[in-house]
Image (cartoon, rainbow, N blue to C red; front, side, top):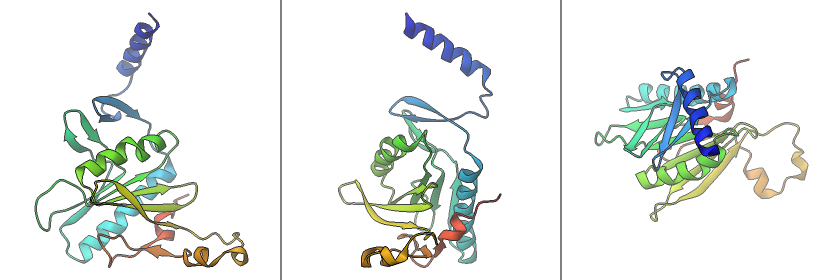
Amino acid sequence: MSEMLDLEMNSRLLNCIDKDKLKKEKIDGKIYLMASPGRTHICVTDNLALIFNNYFKQNKRRCRAFTNAELYINEKNYLVPDIKVLCREKDDSDVPVIVAEILSKSTRKRDLGLKMQKYAELGIKEYWIVTLESLSVDIYLLGEDKRYELYNSYSIFVASDRIETFDEDELEQIVSGFCPVSFPELELPLEDIFDIFE
């Protein structure tokens, strides 16, 4: 009986929402409603797309970074990554070269679980996880076994960090930017990625 009430309440709620503004994903037939992103999330997404698209235009590459564009897999699966990078230089494939997700409290588990699995099944070479709290980017590369492995993590060095306490490995991790594996000639400055419009 309580399941019927929950279903009825959810149905009423959905009828009150402007369906044109509703952002949703479907994974294994289950629909997930997504909250609107906050300002910081939007800034980081826009910054990444701008860096990629400026590079593609300047270098006359047949590639494009899209923000919040649906990635259709099949009837039971369509995802909405924060960033997807498509290239049409060799073929007209709709499989992105890179997908990036900006983590939020409500999507963290799904981004690191179900969505990561679906992106791997699709054959997306690079999967990025951007964490706003730590101002970091983790790059995962797809292995031959169709599973992602962490390639590297990059984060902004905060001046308040006590550098004299760092070991050799930690000192090597201090970088100002990084290059995507798929575009090794493109440098992405961390300060530009996390430049938030206040």
